[in-house]
Amino acid sequence: MTSTNASKNAEAFRVVALSHVNVTVSANAEAAAKEFYGTVLGLKELPKPVGTRQNVGAWYELGGVQLHLSVEEQVTNAASDRHVCYVVADIALAERHLRDSGVEIISDPRPIAGVKRFYVRDPGGNLIEIVQA
Image 1 (cartoon, one colour):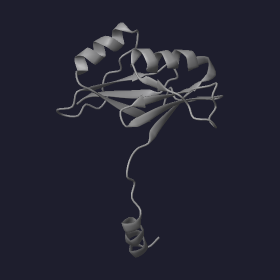
Image 2 (image 1 turned 90 degrees about the vertical axis):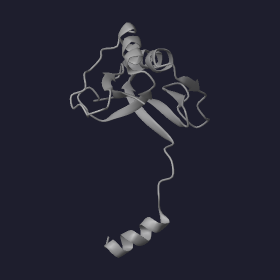
Image 3 (image 1 turned 135 degrees about the vertical axis):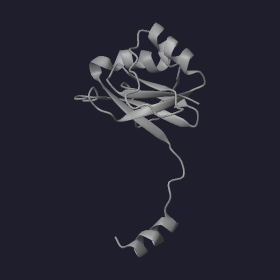
């Protein structure tokens, strides 16, 4: 695509919002993942609309964005750096709560000056960044 075409397309196209984030877990981690997102993180589960796989996974409300938990046969999240980032009001309180819930805290491997954050993995191996607002 030429830069002229790109600029014309850029004027017509723009992303206006984030609808949802999807994380995947294997079937044997589904129950633990639902416990993690629904109880440990305290996300409100939403009814899934007709047409979705009603009997597996879950959808959660997260402010104006949704988190969709999907179940797949083969999931290779454990070594991946792709992640979702959640903002918390108090990073120390968040870390204490997650530790007390049995979640392993992963120290920030690449600290950014002035940013308080750490990482965890959900029961399916999905990486999650926790950052203070």
